[in-house]
Image 1: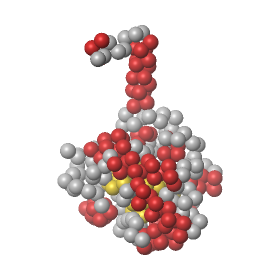
Image 2: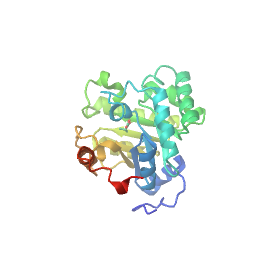
Image 3: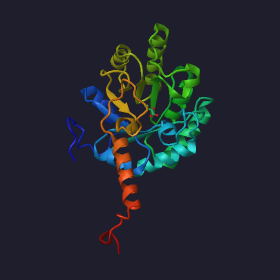
Length: 275
Ligand code: KIV
């Protein structure tokens, strides 16, 4: 397996400790979302360091408008499928909306279910100060936690919009405090979504744990994208931060149309494709 520009190519298993070492060495961390076995296998073969079973599955897999409806059982099903496809990457599963915000005991129960029933290696949750008791309780049970600040899609009805967050000083200062709180509580990494790159740079410089950006500029320790977006399977979503590495949506449409035409014309299957 060859992984371009990575000194961790020989690492058999990505762990939270290795991610921390990558930050120290200045080596960029790669992260993409995965929701099923087949995709996870390809992502793992490509040497992607972290596979996120994101609650974005609510949008791209289930077709909901927001990430709110997806359930813990559904996340566990997806996460278990991803884990079965992976031998190297660290698998992080999102705690879905409503499974950790209320009280820390409930948060721990949700995280334990993900770890036990799916075999994921870590959980991710959105928020800083207002979920810090949940973060501490989950970590005290030995479960690695990744934080998520900036644009937090589970709070979309509070924000009212998906525009760039923390452009005002108050919110930027709160984000800096939250990032520090998450590190102090023991998080192994934090995702920053859709914030100014100068603010992301400050967080990256202040924290010892890796900072993974999505729409947070080039100065984070790593980057994450939604795989369906970067492959061009979802086409209606085109924020500035999204670079497309494929046009699979078009390729699939073409393949499905050619298949349908062949079947309708009686051209598939041919005798040599039969028994
Ligand atoms: O659910 C998700 O895909 C995410 C990424 C956008 C970071 O949280």
